[in-house]
Image (cartoon, rainbow, N blue to C red):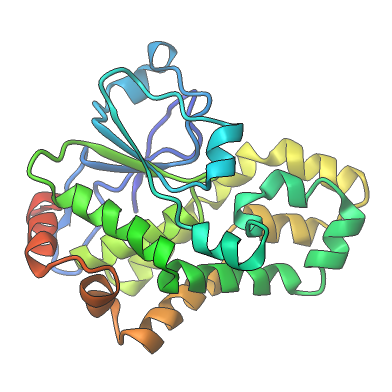
Length: 268
């Protein structure tokens, strides 16, 4: 699995490097990182982050999320925005729960009405399907892969708010392209739960203290295999597999994929 970075001002920061691949190799360390939002980032007070030498940051959040909690981008770092949920928001008129974690857990009564009885799981599964099928999501993940294939690519960090859903799907695509097997991909996807739940512990505790259903809270702030399974099923239905999804759905040429594999793969 990816290696957790002990940053003090960035939640859920992980280096995909070290993840085992099916051919016996591993993801090359120090080149691609994932995390939660960077609104509290302070490189001067966070040597673990500063040591990574990040050159590009790709923010997958909505415009509203970025406006409410803008990233604190270090000097000299390229900052790119690619709203993966823009089309989903435009279609529904409201951002999915994945982009409104604090809002949806602010009122236990409303949360029960909107998310209880398995509704939270169904809503997140629908959001994951849109991460595969919507135009804004395909553009966002195309940007992610093309940045990794760019001639001057340096260490890149991509993130959303919690670093679990939009970031989790991006990680799944990268690891699958590099040759990680299904079990490894799922293990990395689920491995963020502990860090995410720590980050949102005050929110969950406040929600449950008001009488909120803890199962609803965990469905919102955590990840489960069914969420990822919904996205993978959408890929299988529309494209037959991740390779074709990347080539035809995202429009990433085979030459770029070859560059990514060469750059990010190390011998075992």
